[in-house]
Image 1: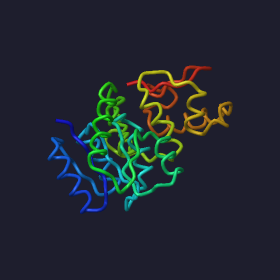
Image 2: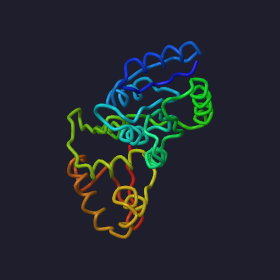
Image 3: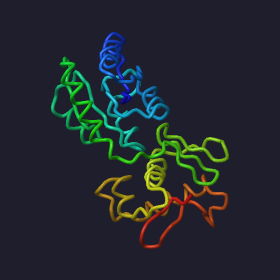
Length: 225
């Protein structure tokens, strides 16, 4: 039995979807806002996510970005937004399909089955990555050291998240600059030295002799367990 996470803040629609999906053999988990959706995805490990974009706390696009930080679970957007720009943005962020409201239930079911088939070959990533006394929670965008939360700036988090998603693998300088700062910054290597030093001060026991955030001179960075 496949498990689906339904994320929608309209109680009547969420209830109707849950009833119909269960009637067709799905295990259903629901969430009414973006933060609950991210927590449910980490705890329940659904096979597919049905996501409304108009949520009360986070925009659905933020939920897509949050999920894509740590998991390749298929995401089917179910939204009343019919503008092409909204669809393009959702798909560019990592959604797998886009269904507009109102919709036919049989069409949604077919798209969910197709999304699950495509996702079955994807290898899952742990939501929490551990490196010594560090725990990087990719779903909740939170890092702790010896159990105490470490406050990171958005840029520091983006840098660490990229390394955590590639735990034990070298991430090139160009990739870090491109994904954290943008394509226009691929040659601004001084940013890397500054932010790597800031992260080491916050995360390493001995920043001068790091055990986890390792620099390969001229190549890039690795987060070692």
